[in-house]
Length: 445
Image 1 (spheres, rainbow, N blue to C red):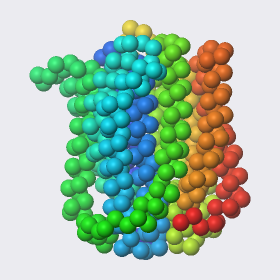
Image 2: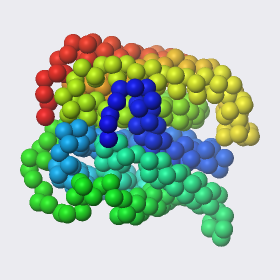
Image 3: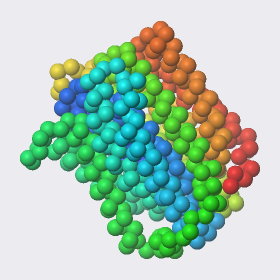
């Protein structure tokens, strides 16, 4: 494929990735909406355990993005024979990770959460969800490996179809299992866990069937099993581990943030869960363009066109901001129109309680959009350790701020959510300065 730096080409590559990257966000949103209309305690619990589960998913996703960068580099170099080897090593990595995390959840999650959560009812619901949800890790982690492959070689069309399959199956199964339709008993948050896991299995099977008949991947020799080389594992680990650590830092800080809110007030937890849901869905363009810039930067470097990296990063940033603001501003300014069909109708009007915080999301999304694109520009160059250091500094600053806001001075949610400005502002500053310095021109792998 002829890769260009035009706005149209960036959008052509990033749009399917954007939709595909929404998969876990869609599952989280679907679980939250159905549980909001089922029971307020279940809704509060899914906000907390959902943040934790995203950390688990981010570990697998981080390794897959590392694999995506390596595969994209080989695709840029037109070394098709290496693509199959890197893909197989990525799948092996992901399955080992899935097994380790599955064992942790099954045997250690109860003492872990018991030390963090005060409310015994929320604790029980969180454990019910996470232990059932853990069975989907094997399908989810293998699935992100397949998506990484197709993202890396810019053949992203079926990702959109597979995401649609995931979404439809998750909505139907949530409706049936949470509320108890078609002969099933109402299962609440446990039903959400089963529905989400089954929908991931269905989407995984659909992608495997597609891969079997897809002619594009045959030149990559994916199904000819090779001896897994230590060098491939080492390369994958060196690129991927900092990205896993990045995800753990970012989402781990988010989990700490929600835990501190739960310790202060279950009512604040419920409001913050709504804000998080809206934040997640409106951040989909940024996640898509961020993953797209990983691929584009790596391909251009593979084709010895480092001079194209900054222009394509700038263009991706403008496309992302335009897309994000076009979607976000109407939703956040007029929540009673756009959010009421999803979160209206309950006795306590959570939308009215959240309106001020929803408006605060507009500048937060603006700052997040810019910071994420430039950070992922660094990641696409392969300098993932440098990106990890930058994010670690920003996370440390953020957690210190939130500690004083929530634990020392016990300030309101406006102050708590304002920490996003500090976090993404720091990331934007560090990332932009590093990209302009050209230190990333040094070969990383």
